[in-house]
Image (tube, rainbow, N blue to C red):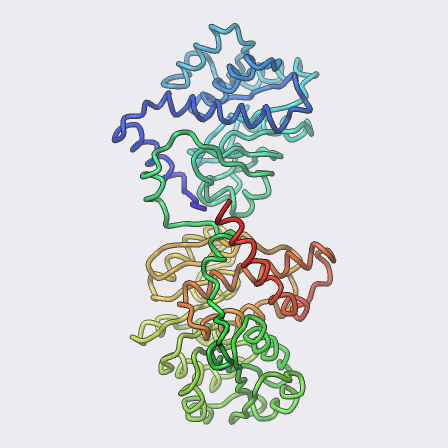
Length: 523
């Protein structure tokens, strides 16, 4: 499912109007009628209202005027409150305001706070609200009587339908512009907007519905640089499992992980590779940890590497070189530690290893001070999986800066360093080296527990071993990781979910994804 920024949506509108020749008033009519139809269906239990449409002075308000006309025709009791003087309404919005007036629609104007307070005081019997204050073009903080109106909407506790996007949410970043309407449904025109699926905007949208407004399909097809990963997208990436396959067919993953006191991270990564379907997994770990890991991992092969005080040393380099000679992918970093010699080993392995690889945790910390090291390998085919703190270290910024522009930060890093970047968190962002971005739709707060990232590293590594390209392994791995958690939360809730629970659910999640993908693709 395509996701558009505010700028892309403006450009799409411009091309439809100027290049294709569809009048803007036609697009507004289509949008308003489609939104009215959605309201008429979804809120049938509240018919005939009364309902109140709060409209701004721009095109979002114009959509609201169109809605009012159609809803009146269908028997709804509609009142429209415009938060601007009548003379401030221009363009296509003015056309539809005039039409609403000709239909004798109930319209009042509140150009300032005093008039707004008076108008709202007279709205005691309203059962349903429509937010048509601001559209996707809002980029500055909400102030004045608009802010007062948003407070009133939220304090009313009434059901709210937001037109295109809840007023006060940045359509590109999902950030809160001072304050925003909390809707229980949002109707999005033509495509979903990026700010509707990123946090915190996602929490303000309620149920998201996209409606067709007659935007030419050729224009929509060209806007594919950001896509929401759903079952169809994820299922299309599932590797084939031929009936004649054997363990050698499905790849051999090499995991370099673990240190004294951090054997759990290594074990979760190795098990993740097995649970996602890799035929073989070999875990290379410090010699002092091999015995405990061999006991923990019945199906995984283990090998001991040279260490110093429980962490890997540079003496492990030659043995790992030999190990990767017959492997299909490398997963490196979980629980490996941050000793200087270990970090030097990690950098050498990343630079020299010809295998596709996934780098996580302490593997990322080894790169943190000098990510430019990634540019030095012409053969690098890597997936990096930082959480926001690790991303901040890699980019020399703060966690707040990363979270304020998750898509931009991930995209810039992926392009600059030629890697696939998985920025973990709510709505994980996957950025490709060519600048394309995927936003994951699976997952839940139950995943906020130790070891989840290690499991994801193994899952992505296992998919790389099965022959998926880094971009594909990252997108599918992240989605399946979240889907497994969603299945568990449906049964057990969000508290107490552990990474080991999730890994046991991965094969079932993969099976369900295969079946759902086939169903959705044909629906």
